[in-house]
Length: 328
Picture 1 (cartoon, rainbow, N blue to C red):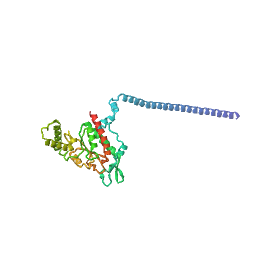
Picture 2: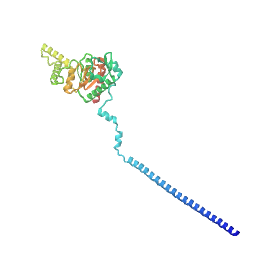
Picture 3: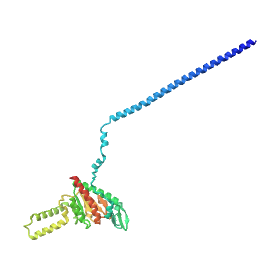
Picture 4: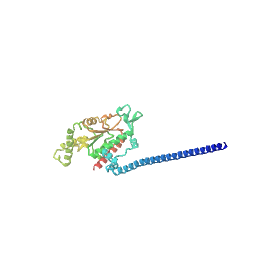
């Protein structure tokens, strides 16, 4: 009995050992299979990563290659477009010169350009150019006056460069000598005594008077009228002086002028009327009592002061002479 018990115990022990060995073998086999599967997974993931990296890298290579090919295949027409200077094109279109006079606001202020008419005697259309009033007198905005004067200088430059005729009109005492002196230096036509009605609307008739004046002047100088009596020569001399009073600044004018400059268009209403009816360009130095709607280019300024008129006319003269030199 005792032997049977021991045999049974040994059998149970051996059975337990064999079971333990089988369990360990199973655990080892599971671990190895797990390692193999993890290794396979890692291999797969690494393979995926490498393929992904390859797929990511290949487009970058293509894009750089495409860039190189795009740079190499650029047309040469794109280079001149970038190298063409734009300012030169603007200058060619607008032909704005660099020799225009510099407009100084301080000099304009010292010349009294900013003074207008009384507030009771003004035109509402001049309101955009008026800064305010002081002592019952309107004050011009000098910045806007400078802008308009700059435009007028550019226009005078163009007129001289293109060889067009310019007529300057200033019959007021404060502007007669200024207009006459500037016109003679510029080589322009001028009127400083009185505007003869019909100068633009009936130019052919007034041109006969201009030709008559030149004929008398040449005849007296050449001795053509020496055979005339003393009384007849005296009458011819009187006729010459009378014609010179109105037409001395129009000698050589063969047609209607291309542009007219007027000082105080409110006083020279006939000039404004004839210019607008005949389509002649009109530039005016206008005070605050002027209606600017019939004027092509207004220079809002004091047209009563000789200093103010002289400053503006000198700027225009400088621009015109610069245009003449550019034409030559």
